Amino acid sequence: MTDLAYMPLVEVADLLEKRELSPVELTRRLLERIDRVDTRLHSYRTVLADRALEQARRAEEEITRGEYRGLLHGVPIAVKDLVYTAGIPTCCGSTLMQGWLPGYDATVMRRLEAAGAVLLGKLHMTEFALRWHHPAWPAPANPWGADRWSGVSSSGSGVASAAGLCYGSLGTDTGGSIRFPAACNGAVGLKPTYGRVSRYGVFPLAKSLDNVGPITRRVADAAAILGVIAGHDLHDPTSSHRAVPDYVACIGEDVRGLRLGVDERFIRHGVHRQVSDAVLQAVAHLVELGLEPVEVVVPPIDPDLLVNTWSTLCAGDAADAHRETWPARADEYGPFRQWLESADTRTAADYAAAHATRLEYAGKITGLFQEIDVLACPAMPFAAPPIGDDALPLPDEDKNTVRPRFTYPFNFSNSPTLTLPCGFTPDDLPIALQLVGPHFSEETLLRAGHAFEQSTAWHTRIPPV
Image 1 (cartoon, rainbow, N blue to C red):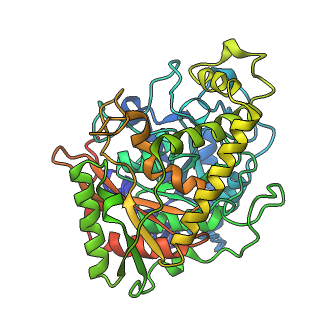
Image 2: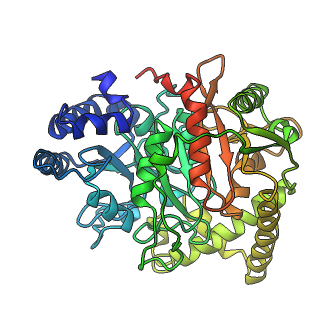
């Protein structure tokens, strides 16, 4: 079962299409594994065993009749528990929402179901997708070490995908919440271009910064899921009208000649040596594969300004998202209430200034990609830290500004990013490379990431669970 649980999604899909593997048997075995393993990892908020088996039976009947829908047909996946699922509890990590049943499916959920995916369940997350897990439930445990941070806020998505408890999951990213769980748990995380994937029916943290994307164990698997969920949605006017490429068909294309941006100071400054060394070794490997290195300077931004700008924008947007329950039901919130309290202290002028800073910095990032096709940098400045020390201060750095320094900038700029394993620390914790591109360059990022993955072995290591 362990070998099957860690098999790449695209390989499982091949077996399902050839009818060498039964969707029902596959789903049953994944549910048994969740029942056995997730008592320690706590990645699932709600397991939908009966529904999943019914979907698997329907998929098996369709595949048998020759009605194969594509790579996700009959494949067990899971989604973060802020993705609306009609008639299924969706609590967004908060007791405030406990027992709430959405009346409709999110667009991404509808598209997954149309592709024939099997929904195993809803994945645990921090309260309303910020940084704190609600004390009512145990936080998801990092499969590489229970004493280590599992990332926020899509922690359940990162843990379940990395630990072989689904073949891929959906997370959301407002300031790093796909990239942190992917990096900490040794998974692949894709934050798409803002607007590439509809956010309709996904409870917002901050509408101007939120993104929905996949967390998987392989780059090709992320490509497969993105290809299903991407595209314009009439229910989300911010979604792009651009055509959606066949990402899976594109990933094997030649990467030679792609311009790879490298800013060694950006990679090393305030970064643990073992992480920066691993990222620079990954850069060297990409160059060996044929990418052309280009020295660049990532636009600098004062760390305090970076954090204050993001916090002001996010808090203001969150206040808008919670206007129906805050402050009317303030006592029902968990630790997220302090975020809404902080929003109350900010003024319209503060928000306007933050918006102006974001636009200016985003313009600088956009200009950077006039010179390059891909930028390489860490996803985090350290490997998964001990629980309770997720900021992990570094020399000459304020601990509150360290962790998001490689994530916030690319939420400001709406840039797509791909996070994937590129090494391990001496104590066997994953180290992550982040590839960043210009708007709607997911195809290029997936090509580069796939080429790196296929010529290295980091992705083959599995956690000790």
